Image (cartoon, rainbow, N blue to C red; front, side):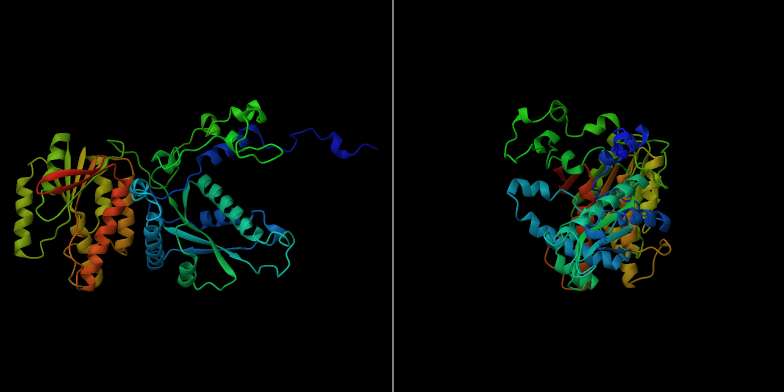
Length: 449
């Protein structure tokens, strides 16, 4: 009697051609996301679907050794970010001077900006001391958790949610932050959120850090060889390019509930202008705006807390062209930027440092707000919203900020926090800005262009 398998044709259980095309397009469109996160929350049902996909990953001995720790608290995110910052500085020191310069321009995490952080854990005692499939390769439980991460990543991309894996973290510090027992190991720290932009190619490839190599360079036949002879690979493998499916299934923008079409769309163009007090930074920004032409909006963040500041604000306003529109945003800067970039031809923000100062004084209770701050918002949330607004398409935007880190270390805690937060804010915006200029004694010095 003929076995049943002889009657089954090859490919009988394959998905349909459109379904296969969608899958390969999904794989080609997956990206490691470090920026462009929107502050909008991920609905519970969407997050549940993504985690269910992760939970369906293959696991050694059906042990399902993973656990998922969801993090939304800004204070916890800040602890993790501080841990990243320390490790990232150590990492930078390991590269050559030329490589280190490029490394420091890279944004390698979205811890603060992403609305959801997720820590994927491995319980190495799951299912007891002897697990089928781990008897000779103990690390298979960790490999199973990585399979869960990949399932999660693809499911998130299908939902239109970006995922970034932050690996520049010390495990022992994660253990301390999240009170993990010894047998539970951190496997992956992930940042999840809706995106304002979808990268058409890997960011490290776009920025020139590394280039993707073709599949044929990684396929070996029968035995491993350090240099695979071309004759060993079939014509099909030799023909594979670094991103074969991109030709057939081009990436489309990620859907998002808050993406809007601008009445005056421009490619994203951000210019960060730094300088000390009276360095000429504001005048330089206004000069660039005049050269650009068109309808100009100036978003100002200063508040008239005293008579001298009121006079200073009036003087600045009088110096600007009469046909420019002034928008006051001492706290709600993110929304003001998003609206202005959709309605004007050029936007000037003057300045980020005063905006930061307003928020710090508000959150520490040093003075009552001079304007109505966004209800229920924290500075961390507003900063994430601002970065998302800047990462979206819109009018060219010139952002003025103070460089405050060149002096002595302040002797008071709030002043030290102000210095540190200003430096971090400048770094985050510089990471997404195509142009960064330092103005000293009225002379602009290009730092990034």
